[in-house]
Length: 252
Length: 383
Image (cartoon, rainbow over all chains, first blue to last red; front, top):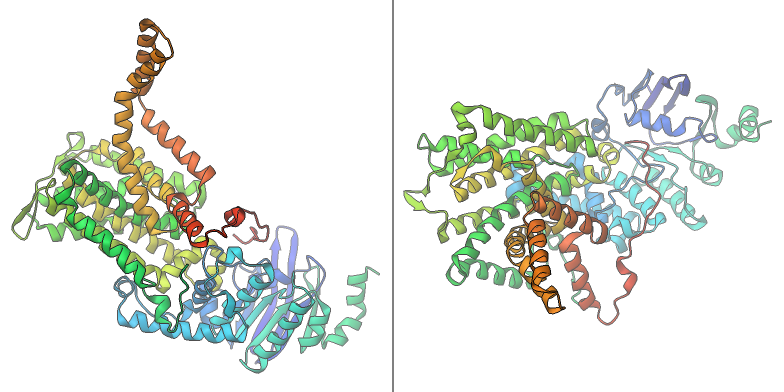
């Protein structure tokens, strides 16, 4: 059994088949990239996995458990974290509180304890803070702890969003275009971090990406999509040479 | 300017970041404690209203400022707290019991209002909460066996542990102050815990909050319940302060006044709730003063510039007619809200922070520091 599996996943908006019977599997500890032209259904697959949309048909399995009908907030609890293509940070909060929200699935305190801020809440806060601090160190975000997100540049926000996902200590992380809007150096940093997430933190990575340099550098396997269907699957170089993929990108 | 050197995670948790805060809040507290002995009884009475309005403001701030859910129904929550107190008082229930019962019942009602609110956002939520307020107002007027309908209910003098606490005495003021301070401390505790952060997360991006494992529906209901419960507690004090309650006190205008409290004080901070309450309570006597004196002042000015006595009399009459027109107060409130939204969306507290920064950075303050800008990166698709 594979670690994560999507079976005949479909998402239809009326007559439009955004995702059309897509099946794929992710092995534990690998980096799998999904590529494809705009509108191919890449982000839709992510939104199906994180339950922003309910699938029209098909099933999703994670660690041999059927998660197709789990409520959206449970997905993070299972250990699947994600980032967003257009950055969905909590704009009017500091970076620290953004990252601490990432710890939400690990919080165990109850409302009345929090109103009184009992020692258990205090201890929990410190424990969360220590974990957050590890992520801050991992991603070199020390300079921004008390900064409001709304005042930070795009490249930093992108990293903070990754940090927030990592704070939830995920087993599987979904990265929606991690390099979009980043310059060459930032993209290079991002590729190192993605590799380190796999090797140092043991996180399985599923990634949607347009930047083929990044895809080639980090991916173990690649899936190419077009019009909601899988065109090709395999190693980065195999997929890039696949005639259907070449046709989809060059329109030949 | 002070630079904090943090050496412990505790430094980010504690309520007072440095000793300066303890000193300034200590001075404020000392002033509030001696206030009944130095201020006129009228001002102390106004301070009681400030405490009650600020408590409601803190409650509404949790819902609107931190969770991002608008409500124009808080007058109804205040009414439920007030009527619970008045009703239970008839059966000689002691104050601590009906005080907590008022908060609890209002909290439950708040949670029930929260459920239909789960699917509504923005203007639709405002409409739903207004409808709720009208329903409550109507029920209070019609359910005569419990609420005595439009005749209203008399609220007996508060008695605590066998001691009478008259609503104009200093002890009632201390009680209201204590409730306000406890509410603020409880709210601050909540805000530095996972629940408070979940509220803020929902305000800023529901999609992201959900994908981080926040049960958005549950926390919205929680926020409604907490906000309503705090307002209910304030309602009990409100009933005692006025010593008489009737349905027409808890109208839409009162809900709008609560919105003014948080909007003018400054959304996103508890300081704002208190500043807004001070502003609102103090503007009322100011408006009354204007109503009485403005016609005379303007006629006087006209006379100084050579108007004869007949013209001056006409001006006096016209201004007096405008000043005593029905609904003028509501119109003035409306203008104030619009002006604040346009020119100082962060409210009085935001303005205060800017002034403070000006002096901290002096002479290096840059004019563009708080220039508002739009950033077009946020996706609206996944809402």
